[in-house]
Image (cartoon, rainbow, N blue to C red):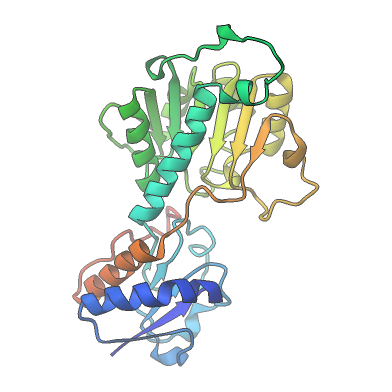
Length: 310
């Protein structure tokens, strides 16, 4: 019998209990899945970082922790975690992110705001948008989500560049890596999409210097992590006209405080961390597969490198 502890908010249990049992049953796993189990008997923890568990050392027979979220920055620094950790790579989450990024890229690419907020009787026939092939877009972060978004935008016809800390290769995407390649990936870019993890290497990667590499009136879209942007540099660049608009879905503090400047800035769109989330049906498939693999002596899919932080 494998004991699996579900450590997340109550509403998540209601959403995940059925799909998890279905997928575990399909794998033929003999298991007990519950919200409460004796600590010494727990084999696996299905974990959301906002759960009450902060000390993993009490789970003396723990084999692995399976994160419900794509981001692991709130887990990977926990010094009591001594077993493998898997992040969530879920096709439902990936599809949702592709759709969200595509929607916001197209909003700015087509200049839709000009007409939505321009119902004033002026016939703006000069505002015909460029073709995708005439627009340079940079994706910072070429992990599972970034690579899929880059591939989607490239298929539409955009001139897509991608950047990651380590070398990557994607068809029809000019890929750069390392800090030497960062300027090349950003130079003259008109739309930048941030899909990097939150690490010491990526914090404030959008700053006064990197903003200077961009085309004038560039757009910044951030569904990645709030720590990726130097907020003071962003606000100054918006006010100075270097950046035309920022669409932000993630923030250093969430929920974003009601008195935060972002809410009332004319050149910022705030969305409440809704770009995408894991889907119980597809995420449960990933979790069941990982438990089955680990029980058979195979490595976890999407296992986290603690040194790299993701």
